[in-house]
Length: 258
Image (cartoon, rainbow, N blue to C red):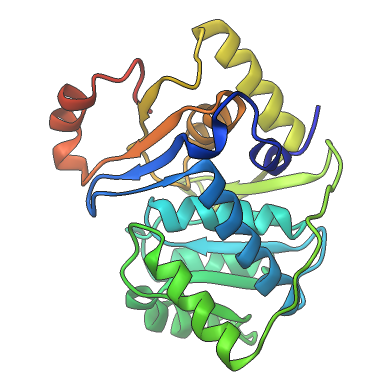
């Protein structure tokens, strides 16, 4: 096996670089695999410059979007594990999760930052470095944030880390219905093996389009949407909103929705 982000960089399949990787229905934006790879490289450089090291955790506090997917792969390329939280959940819950797993940095939408800051600092520790994004959707918000940071404090090009198959890839938290949310840790092997097996079972190729409408903080979204898509090279479509999912499904007619 191999690390999940290595699949993105290696580009399996003929014509992979120009294949659409993610479509954001709300903004109408799309990004191909080659551009997604290069954008996530830029985030990797910034995170390493901020002091993120292999084995660290980095928070992702933004809606499902091209910016969100690029953030996940930038985090993985730095050698860290990503910790996504649901932007519709209370800031106190999301701050608790990131405080609990001691994130080294957080990528967060500006509209969510102030409440998150107050909640995190209320837990008694200093806030980790934040990369603030304006309205996310296409890649413009992440690109603009990285451009601004690069202008003020240039980050040198860093090496992509291959952390090993059994290294931690991401942490997802339970609902906390019986107490505090608890972290569930998954490795690169968990993701890649599940993705390869699911693609073989479903006979998915790079010609598919899949709608992924569940939050980034849900385990199946990573296992059966993003990991599968990068293993096969197909396109993931982020719907406009929960209310438009049925319309989006009729328009795209995907083989599955997650």
